[in-house]
Amino acid sequence: MSSSRQIAGRWLLNAALVVLGLLMFAPFYWMLLNAVLPERLAFKLPPIWWPQDLTLDHFGKVFELIPFGMFVVNSLKITAIVTVGVLVTSTLAAYAFARLQFPGRDVLFIVLLASLMVPGQVTVVPTFIVLRTLGLVDTHEAVYLPQLINVLGIFLLRQWFLTLPRELEDAARIDGAGHVGILRHVVVPLSGPPLAALAIFCSQQAWNDFFWPNIMLSSPEKMTLPVGLVYLQGQYGTGSPVVIFAAIAMVVVPVLILFLAAQRPITQSLALTGLRG
Amino acid sequence: MARPLGSTDQRLRPVHGGAPTAGRDRLTRRCRDALAAYAFISPAYVLFLVFLAGPLLGAIVLSLYSWQLLGSSEFIGLDNFRTLAQDDVALRSIGNTFAFTFWSVVLHIGLGLPLALAVNRAMPTILSYVLRASVFFPMLVSWAAVSLIWKYILDPNFGVINYYLERLGIAAPTFLVDPDWAMPALIVVDLWKTIGFTFIILLAGLQGIPSHLYDAARVDGASAVQRFWNVTLPMLSPTLFFATIITFIGAFQIFEPMFIMTGGGPKDSTLSIVMHIYETAFRRFEMGYASALALVVFVVIMIVTLVQLRIGRYWVHYE
Image (cartoon, rainbow over all chains, first blue to last red; front, side):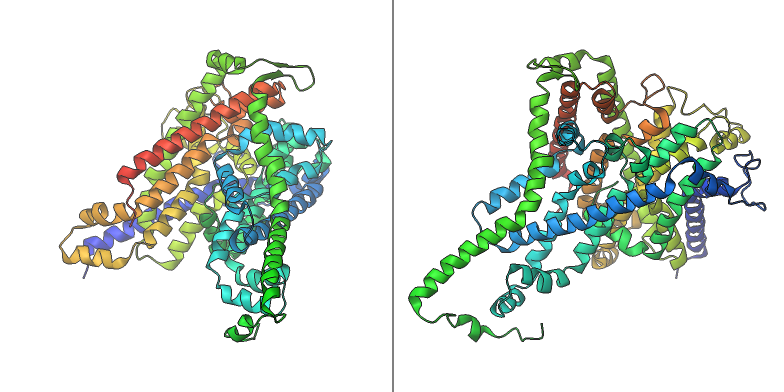
């Protein structure tokens, strides 16, 4: 029943949104172009938006200039430890706060929640001093240990656990299951959505984190990908940026593939946990 | 877990028989539960004490000291805060951060809301998918990669932005080198990177508004504009409020684009508070003074959040 003017307006808006989508993606496309164009064509103005002549040479040069493979291994290792660690510490604590009676429970929980209001930068200097005293400067432990506590994760999981029917746990208890058994066989299998959300959120944070690893790590072979990228730019910034762009492309493309494969769970998880990176 | 749930008769039967032992069993079970609970919370709580609660107290203590990391330490009371009040660079960084945060919140909400409204209607599935993907994707890429890409895009020599602006006949400034233009450039880069988050939560908020409210408004003869002001806006206000606070907190702690793209320059025009804390602590190793700066950030975030909560009472509509 809509008039032709309304239809025209709708398609005009759709067209504007297409242009917006292209503009949002254009910086990545330009980065990818300059990673695969031969050096004489890269960074030319006007840009060659539809290239004929492609090369993969720059990717090899990245590995010659920096231990890129090590960066990948380090990032994978730290991300895996943080993600698994947060899931374990948060699940255990959340179960205790949601289901067990113990003296001091409410006070301990409120103290934990209050810390959500403290911005991370406040604790940076003392945390650095603690880790330095422990002799952990320039180690991976210094990067992941402070990230193993995730108060938001404990809170999210506790809220979810409170909604689970108690009858299932009672039944398991009568069958002789202890708390660990109840957690493993009843609570965790029923908590897929919040655990997945927390895992996606934590791995994304740990994988992309720059601020903290940049403070703690100084040896190139220990660096994570984000720190390594900036290190590469600092080392070879005066040379041709095609190599830097090849390195950036190797960081961005896997994320893009992962995102296209699982767009819905990823966006929903990050909206649920409610923090921007 | 195939056992039926209704096995209550078993639950009621005392496990070991007699009544006197049942009382003791309950006691020991409570004891066991409490012990299990402490065991369960201890990994998280030990980490919490070492890496969050302890350092927070540590920051308060440190802020009262003059402490060079590799040198001597001396108790100086509130001198760090007195110095801060006259430290032009620190005050500049606080002013820069407020300007950045103000524009960040205004632009994220001001552009995120129309975008969410434009997408929250009937449109081809493919268009909706592509749009959500392209708007949200920069969120997932590390600030390190994003800052490096934009550093080259905004480069006066081979940057594409300057090229196209000049083609359009606009005398483009040298964005990252001009003290008047560096901060606006970083505000736009941050907007590009993080508006996907605002967009997604506002879109989820819009989709959560029950359609019968719109039907009722239509029956009452409300125009599209009236429906927006009287249905959409009040129903969306909790989400808008949440998005505002999250954007504020995130923007106030901005660090990476300054650190990587401009180094806080030119002429300290993009020096943010967190960048200043970083330089004070890890370039000049003034740990006490850096802690005092960090506490100021904490207090400012607390005050602004409380004020927002207070103001929120007047415009946020909860069912």
